[in-house]
Image (cartoon, rainbow, N blue to C red; front, side, top):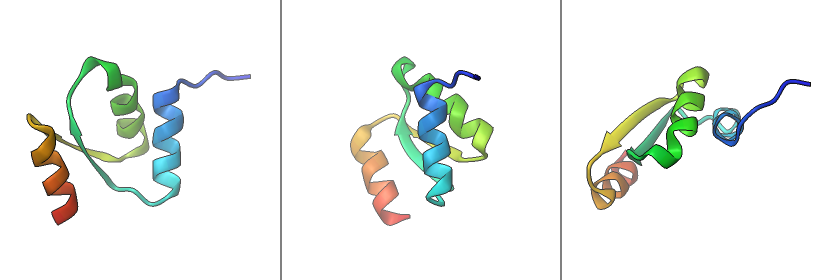
Length: 60
């Protein structure tokens, strides 16, 4: 049985729900999610401030 990490599993769930973009604040604790999103074709929009990321996502 193949193993999958939590980031890839979460990215697969996002893709299944039709998510095309994620708005995020970069950090080492979520690199597995970034890799999973890249593998699933989900685009990553990175910000330097979490409030800006939230406003951008809301405006999208």
